[in-house]
Image 1 (cartoon, rainbow, N blue to C red):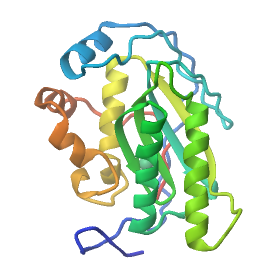
Image 2 (cartoon, rainbow, N blue to C red):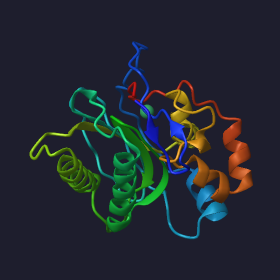
Image 3 (cartoon, rainbow, N blue to C red):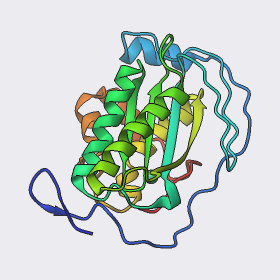
Length: 233
Ligand code: NI
């Protein structure tokens, strides 16, 4: 489906279905540790407290178990029901992106990277010390976006979202690889050749705002084998 982007150019943000195998879902519990990377990141790149907390990676099953730990980086992925391409226009993608950013801010979470698509999204954010737990954040995000898109489509009461998967990121390599993965997800999904051409992800923002040192470090970290749920879009 062709859709209009901000620059007035035709862009295909909804790829035709293919049967490429989606990545396997991680299913393990990992002992966690607070580690030097948290302090290093905070002192180098951030002026506010971020991650320095013991945590566990959630166990990923068909019905995910969600563990909430404050002051910890999370990667979250959610899909629409039956992976339907409901956010299939720039207007709807912008709606999803804007709501995601607003809800995270309202809930006190600090966003690190995001990418939204017609039938799923990913984000990485740092949980708030005294803010809303992840479950509440997701409920708010999904209810707001479902109401809005159902109003646009004249389908009141339609179920929009299926479920979400989350994992605590407590290791430097794991965090950086997933940061890279989310930033480059539009390329992974073959929607654009360069991630910063896609207006509904953090790649362009990251390119402008992230410290050069971090961008260089990320460029050396492979992300194509990151084990997260993902969906053709
Ligand atoms: Ni994806």
